[in-house]
Image (tube, rainbow, N blue to C red; front, side, top):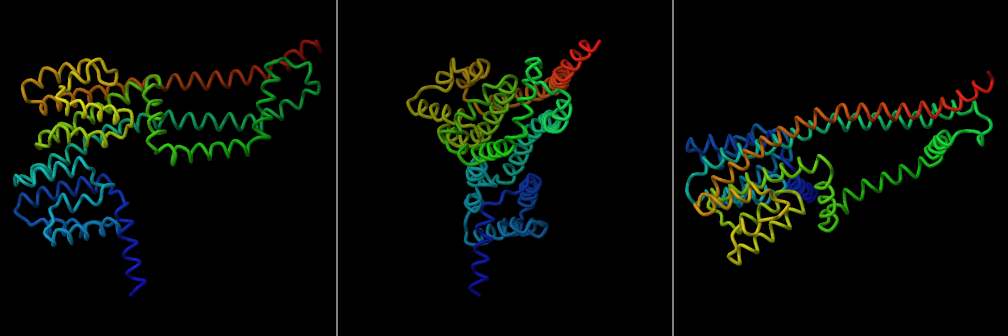
Length: 361
C-alpha cells in the first residue's frame, strides 16, 4: 500500500509537469464547449474526454480535475494547478466568464485562439526546418572533408614550407578538426547545457532574447510573431473583462520573450500612474508606430479589445508574408554559401598541385 501511494504521488507530480499535446488540448476545449452547451455537467464532460484520452499522465491530470470539480471548485481553479498545459491567460479568461454563465462561448473562442497562435509557431518552425537541415548537412560534409579527404590529398606534398598560405590554412584547419575533436564536443555540450539551464534564468534569457531580436532578417519575423501573440492574448483578456493592468501582467508572462516581458511590465507601471498605453509605447522601437497610433485612436473610443484583435490579424498576415520571403531567400543563399565553401576547399587543394604541374613542365 505504501509503495502504491508513493507511485501515485509520483504520477501526480509528473502529470503536473506534463504538457498536453496541442491536438488533445484543442479537443478538450472544443468538446467541453459542445457538452456544456448541451447542458452536460462539467464533471461528466471531463469524464467523457478522459475516457477518450490515451496518454496516461493526461488521464491522471483529468481525473484530478474531476476530483476538484466534485469538491465544488470552479473549472478555472481546477486547471490552475496545471500551468504547463493551461497558461495563466487561458485560466484568467475562463475565470472571468464563469461568472457570466457563458463558459461554452469562451471555451470555443479559446480553442480558436490557441489554434491560431500555434499555427503561427508551426509556420515559423516549418520555415526554419529546411535551412537548419541543410546547414547541419553542410557542416557534416565539411567536417568529413577536413578529417578524411583533405589529409589524404595533402599527403602528396612533402615540403610544407613551399605551399601557398591558403593551403597552409587548410592544413591547420584539418589538423584542428583531427586533434581537437574532443574539445569541440565538450564545447558543444557546455553550450547546450548553458542554453538549457543558465539560459532560462531571467538575466541570461534577456540577453539571449535581445540577441534573437537583433539578428538580421529573423528579428523582423520574431517581432511580428511576438506582437501578434501580444495583441491576440490581450484582446481575449480585455474582451473577458479582465482589467488592463492584470491583462498586461498575464500577457507579459505568456509571450515567452524576456525583453518584451520587462517592457510590458514597465507599461503596466505607467498605467497605474494614469499614463495612457499609447503615451507609454510612443517612440519605443519594440512597438511599431502603426500599432501605437491605432491604440491611440481606439483607446479613446473604449473599444480597445476590438482594435487589438484587428492588429493581431494584420500581424498574422505579415508573418505569412515574411515566412514566404524567408523561404524564397534562404534556399539560394544557402546553396551559394555551400558552393563557395566547396570551391575554396577545392582551390586550396588544387593550387599546389597546379604549381607542381607547372614546375614539372
